[in-house]
Amino acid sequence: MWLLARGAFCSRSVLVRSGMLRSLHAHARASVAVAWGAFVDRYANCSAKQRSGIELHARARPTRLALDRLFGCPPDACVRVRAVGAGMRHALVAGEVLGGASARTVLAGFGLNSSWQLGKPSVDDSIDRIGEPVVCAVDGTVTQIACGREHSAMVVRRHDGIRRVLVCGNNAYGQLGLAAERSGGDHGLPRHGINELTALSDVLGGGEEPVKVQCGLDHTVVLTSRGRVFAMGWGDDGQLGTGLQTSSKCPVLVAGLEGTPIADISSTTDFTLALAVDGRLFYWGNAEYGQCMVGRKIDRVLARMNVSFGGGRIKAVAAGGCHSLLLTEAGQVYACGYGALGLGPDKLAALEPTLIGGLDGVEAILASTDRCLAIDNERRVYSWGLGNSAGRLGNGSAAANVFSPEALSIDPALVSPSMTALGNDIAIMVS
Image (tube, rainbow, N blue to C red; front, side):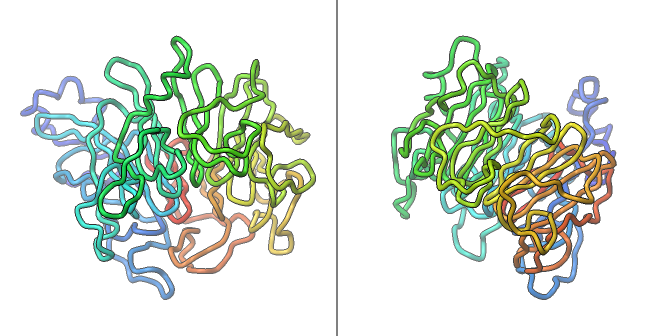
């Protein structure tokens, strides 16, 4: 039974034979995934003529994915996706595979894997095999995933209910928080398959757990259930928020946030945005393009800096490469920094948050190195930024830049703001 149609259910006979009918009858609806960008073509559930200028392995428009092909399971298995993440040129999808007499949690990854950022070594690292899936078993339920340049991190709820952080990939700067180094394979790289970030337990208080992770290019940020923020990895631009230009191979507490619980964090390159429970906004890391939103360019912000904003209460933040996005509770989006900010072709720089026209009722924002997404309350998806040969803007073109938000052709029924990941060259959303 083909399971990629929206609302499709696992075969009743399969559930009866496996003895899972009673527990899964109302919960076995298969997920539907849509993606575009690099390495997506291999998993598309329909063929398409490749447009000129688009990489052979890429799809330049939103495309339904064959999840059974990605997860390496039979077509009559039911895949329930729980979390997605996308980085520089790799993506991870975590879900439960229900079929036969078993249910298992699986992490499926595709894209580049030279540092094992997909969770474990690929069977074959040759160029013509890049993009083939890497599938790993996970003990527990993956609730959130983040991907960086060549590393990944995820929050997993164990069977005993306790949350932990798992990491994998390149650890050259300590971004995995694994102090003990080892070189993987013949490349001599400090790379690791999936490991638990056990060093986090040394700095957390009693009952405190990780709730969210973010991956910059070469650093990782962790938000805890008590609203504290820890960071590790490359710190030359102040990415760790300690007030120093030093890196760390273990989680360190971001300074200056004592007594100020943080509700959300965002980081994809070399800086972090942190939104406090009381609505205040904080910034640390690289700010050379003015993306720090304080009216001037700062080479690097070593310790957290308070950012004033007069456009209303902030609902969400998104950190890009040279730019920042803010979403207000009124559903308006503001941009700051440099590049294709969504402000039109004549305004490529803004030192203070500037309202993006044409966007109303927005519910979610995402940013990556050179591009952005916004999803409104009618589940319309808007894309803008710098295009490339991977077709990463999702509008069908190759290298054309988009300077103002442009609606993508996606069925609103397939859009879930909370289950969308935006990487440098890959985007994926699951419903």
